[in-house]
Image (cartoon, helix red, strand yellow):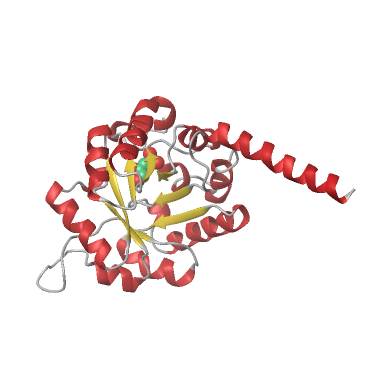
Length: 249
Ligand code: G3P
């Protein structure tokens, strides 16, 4: 009897494993969701904390890692009040010294950030600057997400060795049209390019992602998570929008 119960238990998990495998393609880990607040009014100041609390609640009930990237002056406030990973929207490759108006790695780290975006479409950098920002992120132990706009730039970014690359076709950003459906080739092409160049780098995709089916499609294309903004930050109920986003995982 005990043997039969054990056999049933093992078979069930075996079948579940294969169903998950085929549904998710090559990716079996838990996805990473990074919510960029940009300069949206709905994600500024006190609202930055409220959205972070919604992310924390959904992350806790689902076990999915959800991080937020508020505006720089809100990093300390969010990181102090909510227990969840906080990213910077930008980082400069500067050290301590005469660099007025720059974002210094130690400062955002001390403010509570655990990672940073680099080269977002709305904050483009030169290749040399990307490399310098990445070096600064590594120096201060910050997780680095380099944003890219097509397969060749994704390949170049992966060669630099960040933790993540995030492919976002600029024309789809803020459009409500999900990259995972409108341009699936740019996502699968990026996944393939990164696997060849630097398999240790994880691939996120973004632009127009807001619904459960958009995230599901992104994962099925081999990405390991999403970078998103307007669909959640501007939603009337960000928590409900997040719950919808993860509903098909
Ligand atoms: O950083 C995320 C972003 O650029 C995508 O924006 O509004 O299309 O989700 P959105």
